[in-house]
Image (cartoon, rainbow, N blue to C red; front, side, top):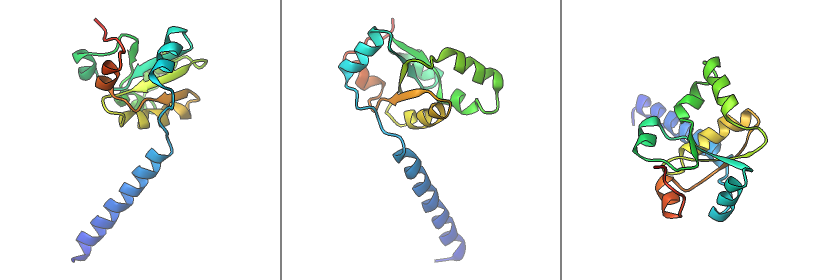
Length: 138
């Protein structure tokens, strides 16, 4: 095996290990669907959707607020965006977040936890939440 290919393969494997390690640091919430619904109804929690705007336009949950992961990633360089996000999220409530398949919520959780928010990422994606009875916005 040539040296260049081997070094590229090792770099790729190191990146994979790093990403798995980061994802392992965040756990999905153990709260069941009934608990999530109850906390939302009681005003003890909010629900954010970290999918992108195009996905949101194709359909979203009635109780959700759009907060695209791409925006969350830009916050460190864009203070106006960061201030907007900080104003939109309550510090005193649980924040449930979802995406399409439960992958992007891991990164969103890592970003928002660093800012002091109580994040409970949902493993279920948008379609699974609809199937579980969460109402679709009209």
